Image (cartoon, rainbow, N blue to C red; front, side, top):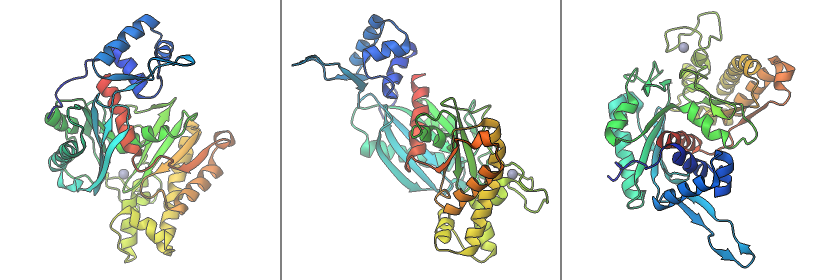
Amino acid sequence: MSGKERLPVRGAQGDLLRLVATGHAESRAQLARISGLAASSVSLRVEELIDAGLLVEEGSGTSRGGRRPRRLRVSPTAGLLAVADLGAHHARLGLLDLSGAPLVVEERACDIALGPEATLDWMAASFDELLLTHGPPGVPLRGVGTGMPGPVDPASGRVVSPSRMPGWHNFPVAEHLGAHYDLPVLVENDANLLAVGEARSWPGCDNLMVLKAGSGIGCGVIVDGRLHRGRGAAGDISHVRVRADSSTMCSCGHSDCLEAYASGAALMGALSEFGIATRRPGDVVALVEDGVPEATALVRNAGRLIGEVLTVLVNFLNPDAIVVGGSLSTAEPLISSIRAAVYERCLPLATRDLEIAVTRGGPDTALLGAGSLLLDAVLG
Ligand SMILES: [Zn+2]
């Protein structure tokens, strides 16, 4: 595989390339203005990036009305990013170009319960297959990234104490993937990836809480337009205690966590006690749409519990919007119960302009978020 060569850019050159790749600049003048570098210095570096085959300039030359501004963009042959969003039973996998545009995205069945080695080797084999089938010849792979359905220590790229991921605790995910590729590797919590990808669909909203309601419950937090990780656990609301009667044990060993009542896994467990079989959280949504009262009541209760936890966070963080994604997000009673709890209990100043809505990004939002963070790692 031709993935060994590194980008010949670091520092200021990498910054200029990133400004073009992320759509913040498309001319030398804009690059000079945003970067603060002198115009001559920008021009020199842009020429070097063009010579290296990383940038291309379009619309060059003169037109009848005089000189047309030349538009810079990342060369389609500058490189590829291989990204995945790993779920309990499915993974979305894709190849992106360096501007974050997908070349191909596929959803494939997998089983994280098989453990980290088997799952990550499967992921690497899937990436290799996508590259072989869809990668343009001669275009190098520049980085690899994946979302994990559990807490990730950003410093080490390890998964820490995840629920429903037997054998994954403290496994060096980044190291294992890195051994396959010898390239920059991004390992990030899946709700964080969703938040970064979703933020692109909320221009003008710099502070977002992006909830992922699927098999588990996660939340990614965008503050001042950037992902807020804290020490890695920021946004992890799944083990907030929501009841005081110690009636339900959580996978973390404590009782009465939000996750134990309101996650897709918890709802599926509760439905099975009614004799209603489901295989994945999407089945719960289908039951709600079919008007099955047990499912509707459980989802409404989950929304209320999530909303009560969010109430504290909305007062504290005062975001512009709460965005709900994940496979349960299309269940209407979930959103309406979250709204009811938050609007009823939050401070008026905190909810005055607060929007609570389902995600605007499509099914590839988390992959696009992965591409965005991975580009930082590749050029950083
Ligand atoms: Zn717990």
